[in-house]
Length: 333
Image 1: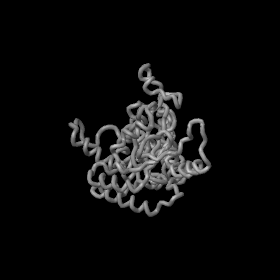
Image 2 (image 1 turned 60 degrees about the horizontal axis):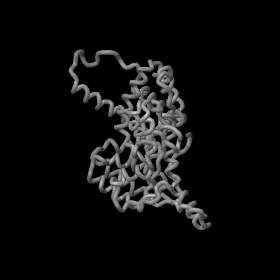
Image 3 (image 1 turned 60 degrees about the vertical axis):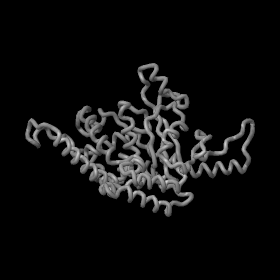
Image 4 (image 1 turned 120 degrees about the horizontal axis):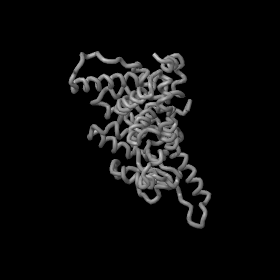
């Protein structure tokens, strides 16, 4: 057992600062992760041809708990694998291997959005789409810096004039008051416009679905946007007040994006292989959903009824959400 895991057990209130989720969330996540890990190993065992007896070979240098904590610390703190190796008393390559193994395991167990969570069941996916029409969903996007590509043509593809850097863009669609992430579109080219990103995802939603967005989405009939100042003119006092009220309702999508970026692997310059980008962002969004109470891991144990329980939870939220609430936990950022 390493010092880091011991520290978390002795100081559970520090969990959110260190790994991005509460200690209670961590214990629930570990229980689920161990179950997924067991299933994965059993599947691999059935497919492999054994040369040595089961149980032979080198033993893992870290416990499962330590490995999961290592993975979460990377996502939250974006340390180098050299530093993680020193922290957990393993080699740099071992820290790298541990992270890449648990990245896939945890990504499979933590759906990054409501739509992804019910996608395996077409009937419940249709029910979810119908229920979502009761809400005006909020859409926004954010860019993240990536290392400059070596090839000049690739540099031009990813250079964002807005950020003056090479970036990838993520689009989030959330419930009112930031209650949950409804849809995630990750790893798009930074220069691609917000409105084009939304159009790519438009078919996922019902034609009756309403959205709200900033001025980047002006021109789409389904998206309500702020009143734009006329050319060589000014907004009236009433129009300014309407824009202020509109912004106060859609600000929670900014809070969700901010919470995603508290995991520095999703906020700082991305240092891993670009092929891992979507997996990292998906896992971070899954952790954010767990953090804000939108993703209940106990529900995930019941595969047949998961989607139906999610839909029932949506109906419950419609009664709980009030006009000026934002259902997010921003403590200990």
